[in-house]
Image 1 (cartoon, helix red, strand yellow):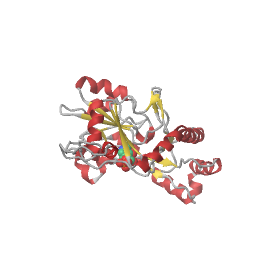
Image 2: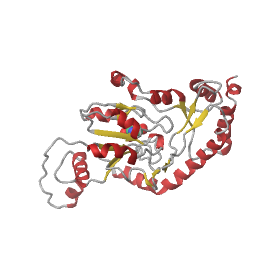
Image 3: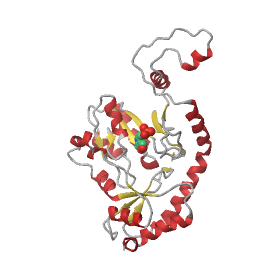
Length: 305
Ligand SMILES: Cc1ncc(COP(=O)(O)O)c(C=O)c1O
């Protein structure tokens, strides 16, 4: 099971292993799956559940696991967006048996490309390391360290999923700065929150009660009360020279997955994907620039005129 409201890579991962994606809806406030939406989408054949910390908002992992653990169903946390977010006072991902990370340039912690798996299960860590290096019996590090390397063997079909040392070096420096990067984004988010709260028809993403977001994606839902719809607001922002983005995509609307829409539909997913947009947040965003964004939100018609 997997939320449709996520970058398509989340669902593709299900297909890569020959499994069948079953889409779960999300909570309409947080944009994440929760115990209710997971329970509704579980079937007798569910082997694993992928939860996503969407846009950096921590998912309620304990809530989901209260449903899945008794069934012996594994939860995989897709924490691609969430480096530096917290869940119940700990870094996001710390409570997951297995979590996956992205270091793509859009992420707060980037190595250019690449990613990481973290797991609390030692056998899984050993197996992941084995598979990432062509399932070679001797690691590259051991081979390079030995004068006469032992003959290697390959007991299964592996992959080249290595990260280069150069990328890892960049990532380690970024990791040292993560706290500072997240603090800056949270300060920008706080300014947006104060400015958006009084605007009827706009609702901004917030921290859930059990954690904090890194605000990788600061999204705003444009509802019926707002004078124009989401797409027109994007145009108004663009007309003012401000580049915003449509909200998170929904995988079930894309060609490979269109026939998998559940019978009951995915109403919260569809509402969020249709009505949200992501506002600019970056380290160097000045108060003056942010005030320009806020001015358009207050008076979108002015920008379109
Ligand atoms: C939730 C989520 N999962 C997975 C990915 C894929 O990450 P990568 O491009 O590093 O494979 C992304 C990338 O944006 C993402 O947002």
